[in-house]
Amino acid sequence: MYIINMRSPKDNPFWKRTKELLRQQKISQKNFTDSIGMNYSTFRFWSCYGYLPDIRTAYDIATTLGVSMEYLLTGIERQAMITSDSLP
Image (cartoon, rainbow, N blue to C red; front, top):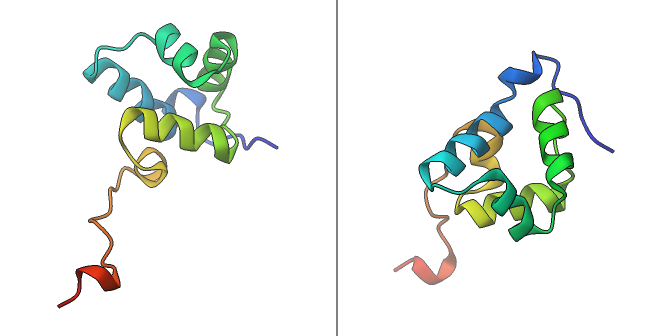
């Protein structure tokens, strides 16, 4: 199931951040969708109409762009998580 953002689709922060990262990394939308195995038409439809992708696709988008899903959704990138291995 896909969620429609209740704001204007053009204001969907997930897709705004995704497209900005693509611009920064100089990756075309077509090449990007090919690299994650996503249909380009689907990418265009979802991003134009504000649909959020399923969790697996969101993960593929985030990892390919080198960010977290949290960043794409909220704009906040967490600091590295503290693990028991990193404690003194």
